[in-house]
Amino acid sequence: MKYVSYVLFFLLSCMLAQSPLHSQNLLKKLKDKAEDKVVNKVFGEDNSGTSTGTSSGTAASSGTQTGQGRMQNTSGGGLVSTPPDVKKNLAAASSAFKSGNYGEARYSARQALLGVEMEMGKKVLASLPQKVDGLDADPSQDRVTSTGIGFVGLAMERTYRSDAKELHILVNNDALMLSSVNTYLNAGYVSTDEPGKKVIQFQNYKALLSYDDASGYTLNVPFGQSSMFSVQGINYSSEDAFMAAAGQFDIEKIKKGLGEK
Amino acid sequence: MKQLIFIQLWVILMAFLPLRAQEVTTRLQEAEKSYTSGQLEEARFALQEAIASINQEIGKEILKALPANLGGLPADTKQDNVSGSIGFAGLSVTRVYGTEEKSARVEIVGDSPLLTSINAFLALPAIMGASDPNQKRIRVAGYKGILQKETGDNPSYNVQIPVDQTLLTLNVTGVADENTVMAMVNALPVDIIAKYSK
Image 1 (cartoon, rainbow over the protein chains, first blue to last red):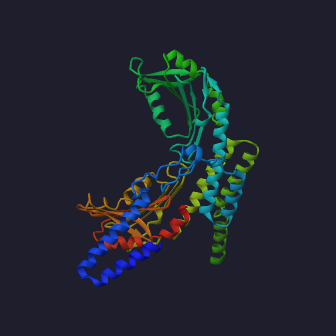
Image 2 (cartoon, rainbow over the protein chains, first blue to last red; image 1 turned 90 degrees about the vertical axis):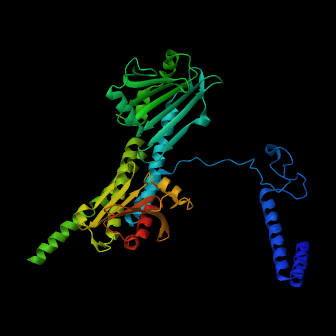
C-alpha cells in the first residue's frame, strides 16, 4: 500500500512537471497498469510468472488454495429437501385471503399444493419395486417434480441400473404430453407393420411400444383420466426381455397412489 | 318505494358477492380436512379449486383497477373476462376498449409460457431493434417491455411487458401514433398487476 502511494505521488509529480500531452500518456499507462492488475486479480494470474494460482493439494482432501484463484467447495450438506409444510401454508393462505392479500393467499395455496403433490409423488415412488429384472433402484435418481400447472403436472422418475442395462420409469399425472399419445393410440395411425412402433395391451391398458437403436425400448401406457406410465429400457436384448421387466410394475397400484379412477 | 327496491337489490347483491370468497375458504378447509385424513388426492383437488377461485378474485381486482377509458377509447365491460384455471396459463384477464375504427385489447396472463422467451429477448438489448426496425424496448413503471409496430393498411401496435410472473399485453389497432400508444400503456395499473402477480 505504501509502495503504491509512493508510485502515485511520483507519477503525479511527473504529470505536473511534464507537458499536458506527456501527462496524458502517463495517465494512459497508469490506467493500463491498473486495468492489468484488476484483470490479473480477477483471473488469479500473477505477474511474477510463478504458478501460485494452483491449489496446494487435492481439493477433496484439503479444500484450500494457496494462490489467488477461487476456492473450490469441498464440503457442505446440500439443500434441505423437505417439501413445504402443507398445514402451515393452508393456514397462511386462509389468513391472507381473509385479509384481502390475494397474491399472498395464492402463493401459500400453491406451496401447500406443492407439498401435497410432493407427498403423493414420494408415496408412488415408495410403492415401486426396489429391484427389477436384477437391476437395483438408484435412489439418488428418484425425482418428484411438481409445477402446479398442467404443462408438466406431477412427474415421478426412478432409474434402475446395472453396468450393462438401465430401466427408466416416468409416471406423469395431469400432463399435456398425454394428449399426444392418446391421439396416437386412438387415431389408429399405428399399424402392425410400421417399423419401430406398435400398439399393445399392457395390464388391460392400450399402450404404445416403440424401439429405436439410439434409445432402446420405450413403453407408454396412458391410464386413468390424465396419467401416463412410461418405461424406457436401454440395452435390452429383445422385446420379450424388456416387456418382462416392464411387467413387474403394477399400474393399478400406481393409479391408486395417484387417486385416479 | 324506489328506496325499498334499492335496499332489496343491495341486500341481494351483498348476499351473492362473497360467494366466491366463501368458496375459497371452504375449499381451503376441505383441503386441510382431506390432508389430515391422508386423502392426498382429495386435498390436491380442493387446493387446485381454491387456487382457481383465488385467481378469479385477483382477476376481478385487476379489472377493477383497469381504467374505464383508455386513450379516449371506452371499455366494453361486456367483454370483460377472467379465467382462473389452474391449467397451463393460470390467471387470465381480458378487457377490450374501443370504437368501430380504433380498439385496444388488454390481456394479463399469469405464468404465461411466453415469459421466458420475452425475458430472454429483453436481456439482449443489442439485438432488439437491430433485426426489426419496427420493434423497440420500452420501460413502463420500471418494467422493461417490447413495443412492436405492425405496418400495413390498418396500423397496429403490440406491447408485451413481463411483470414478474405475469405477462401484460396491449394490442392497439387503428392508432398510427406511437406516443398515443405509449400514453395508453402508461395509463395501465402496472403496479397493481405486479402486486397480484407475485
